[in-house]
Image 1 (cartoon, rainbow, N blue to C red):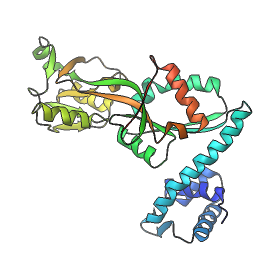
Image 2 (spheres, rainbow, N blue to C red; image 1 turned 90 degrees about the horizontal axis):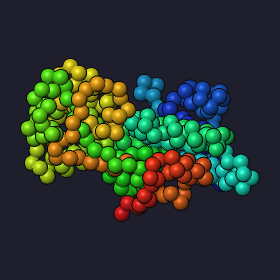
Image 3 (tube, helix red, strand yellow; image 1 turned 45 degrees about the vertical axis):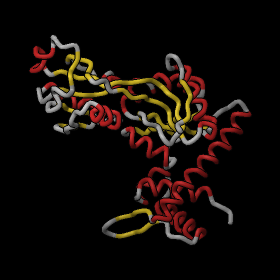
Image 4 (tube, rainbow, N blue to C red; image 1 turned 180 degrees about the vertical axis):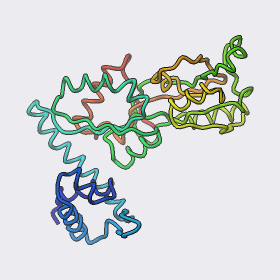
Length: 300
C-alpha cells in the first residue's frame, strides 16, 4: 500500500479543526476535495477516522486519534527529508512549530525569532501558545517540533533555559503592613493568596506540603494581567512567577516569599537528535542568544 502524503496532510488539518469547512479554508481547497481525501484515506486504511453527527459535529474515533499521532510523525519525517536536502544545498527551508507559554513568548522568543529569521529567511515559524501543561501535551502528540515549558520535564529530553521563582505582588491595602518585613510569609497569609497558574503548581504543592501550609485556592487566575488587576483592587496578595511577572507592566510592590518556590524553564522534545534540521538550527540560535547558553540534560 502506497501512502498518499497529501491525504495525510488534509486529515491532520481536519483533525485539528474538527470541521471540514474550516479545514478547506486553511488549506485553500474546496470542501468536497477535503471530504474526498479523508474518505480515500479511510478506504485505503480500511478504518473509520471520524464520527460524524449533524447535531454533535465531528470527532475522532479512537483509531483516528492513534493515526493522527503517526500522521504527524510521518509529516515531520517528510519535512526533515526536504530540510536535509535543502541543507545540503546550503538553502535551509521548511517550517518550525514551537509550543510556548506567554511569558516565554514575550521575554525570550521575539529576539530569538528575529535572529533566526536573519539567518534563515525561508523558514516559516508557527508559534502556538498555551499553559506549560498544554505545551507538554503538544510535544507528546507531535503537534509541535519542540516546546518551552516549566519543570518537571519528564518524560521528555530537555535543555535548561533558566531558573525561575515565585514572588508576591502586594496590594496597597497591605503595603504598610508588609513594608517592614523582608519577605511575605505564606503560612501567615495563606487565606489571602491570589494564585496565578502557569506551571508552578507542582513545585508549590510540594513546598506547601513540606512546610505544613494549607494550599487554599481562595482565588485562582489564569494569566498575569488578571492577577495584577485583582491585586490592584485589594482582593489579596498575588503569588506569581517572577519570570511571568516581568512580562507585565505594573507599579505594584513586589517581595520575595517564604518558603521559596523555584522551578526551571527549558526546551522539551522527545529526542533532540530526532528534531528537524530547521528545529535544530532554531534551538542553536536560542542557545547562542540566551545568556550563558543551555545545560543539556536528559530526564530519567
